[in-house]
Image (cartoon, rainbow, N blue to C red):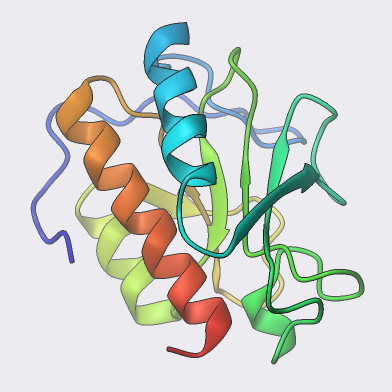
Length: 151
């Protein structure tokens, strides 16, 4: 579990919806590696996000169709969607985490609360700028999936 600060200043994030990262995005190659790494995780299915722009990719869990509790999904009224990856023009990730963990990642500079949070569990994680940050972002996605599963 990552507990080191993200180097440098936070990226600029939109103040009007949908929430997206405006600078410090991943390169297209690094974003492609992020997408490939996330969809190579065990039990993950790629789909269309129920709540994000068309360029986003939803991360669904093969073994779970419904959220175990509403705060474990970005779309509590539909299929369980604990994570979605924004497109190559944005490269950030929206996901759910326990409130305390999301607050810690926010303190460390990796994340910020989701613009439209309902439960305090919804966060934006910034797109990775290099391979080391890619590993961190993928590990945060894994934390989100574990939270959604109840692990």
